[in-house]
Length: 116
Image: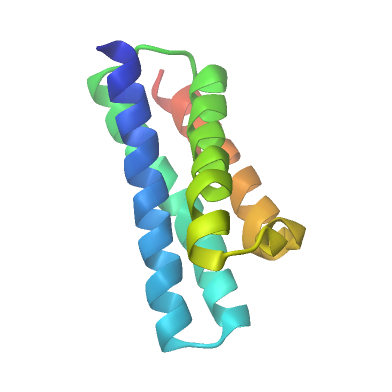
């Protein structure tokens, strides 16, 4: 049950970030979409982390941040790149991929440290 709740929070965050990127790509230029995503991703995961640590708090901040970003990486590599983008080129982009991964990790960790 505990792992299910942890993974569910991570998957919701991944889906919300995907929605942010999808809408932004339809409404603006790619550089602006990447900026919106880079701003939105840590906000989404800070909010989800606040819910997780306030209501459940099953894991420490560091492993939680690792699981959250790990799920995002796995879903991007297993779903987004092969089936949506049809290319793994997204992993060549620092602002498009690696910066949001780092910000997700940092936001989750800092939220956990603050709320624990």
